[in-house]
Amino acid sequence: MPASFLHGVEVIEVPNGPVPVTVVKSAVIGLVGTAPSWAVESPSVAVAPNTPALVSSALDAAKFGPIVQGYSIPYALAAIQAQGAGQAIVVNVFNPSIHFTAIAATAFSFNAQGAINLGHMGVSNVVVTSNPAGTTYVAGTDYTLDAVNGAITMVPTGSGGHITAGASVLIAFHYADPSKVADADIIGAITGGVYTGMQAFQTTYGTMGFFPKILIAPGYSQDAAVATEIDTMANTIRAMALVDSPPSTAVETAIANRGVVGNAFATSSSRTILCYPQETFYDTGIVPTGVTLSTSGTPVTAQFNANSVGPYSQWVAGAIAAKDLAQGYWWSPSNTQVDGMLGPDVTLYASILDPASDTNNLNAAGIVTVFNAFGTGLRVWGNRSAEYPASTAPDNFISVRRTMDIIEESLELAMLQFIDQPISNALITAILASANAFIRSLIQRGALVAGAASFDPAENPYTQIAAGQLVFDIDVMPPPPAERITFEAFIDVTLLQQLGQTSPITAAAGATS
Image (cartoon, rainbow, N blue to C red):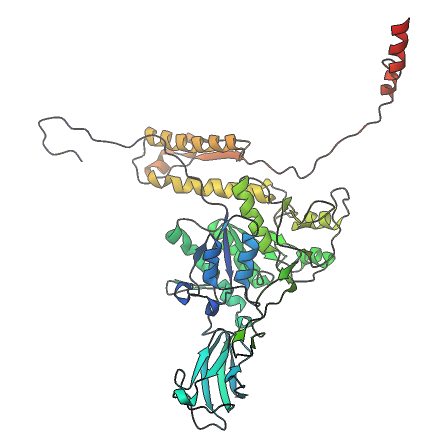
């Protein structure tokens, strides 16, 4: 504000003109599920339940614990990172103080090494008493507890312990049980300003500066309730929700489920990607009931080391993120090779030549599937969201919908610096210049075929401007994917006229004459 009196000269700097538009992050996966937080090597770095955490590396992934069967997050992070790129915002809903199974006082006997294997990993609330009951033993004085591996070692009487060698004791305990996690835990809620489950994704712009754009809940999104809510969240934060089919679902059942009310596939949302089928993979996960004791009494974990079946969405999400970074968010995820899978858990007939193939029938029903033919490797196959075939609008293409999301959110965020400025021709010009510069850059990169921003006075009557409101038009067209390539072949008999006119025999005869 100018001084009330000045006998001299001053300069007041007034910001004006266009500003750059920063493109929002597209290759960020929102992963909600379960993690064995009780097994994190350094408990001090473990992520608290329902707290969003950014995972950009294997070191970050370690904060959610090792790959243990029954827990979805470590498996999903391994599948995502196998694609070579992409970040994930992870929400672990597993809480061992809530999700556990209680074992009543059960008789155990110490072995020759003075150890007991409880048969479960991730134990808590351990109470050791004499058998028959009467004396309650004290942890640290009478025994030591390996809570991660579920092993108890007696303290010798010569070291102050009160348990005799080979004694039988009664032990009651809880063990971490991910099967106790319900759909409601994954969906989450907002209670007293606390966000849990997938609702916590709404807080990430405030804490990290961006929202996840590819939402997955492997192992849970096959349930209709979770599928519905993850789509709702996708609409809230402008993301795509990846929904799975149950294991061992036949092709015809997956297609039929598109019309079964109450089924996860019964949706026409432009923000839901239907992922079918589930995939086999080599499972090196730790078996939580497989711990044994060595001859010295030391716990030894067991890895499954055999084929298992997992939700397809976790690999598709990784492939989308990796392709975003390598080529751009305007590229379709279809025809992208996927690493870390062994193949679908049902037999699929894949062909780009036969309209009656399983892969084509699935795509025609708006289902993204997996393609495998001679020399192709396993590939994401399908361009369209669940909006197809109910709608044939261009945004049923996954890449078109995602491109529009990026454009819209990027422009909205860039306009923050213009909000509350005095309305003038200079302001309108600056906003248009900013938007059009952004659109031109997208055209040059190939993210748009064409487009422009404009200001129509007819849409901005003086009464509306007097209320502090401006309306601009954005006309753009993202490039649709080349889903179908057709050649028209003709047998042209007139081409036979060329025979003999320039043949080697004719040419040789002319040379000798």
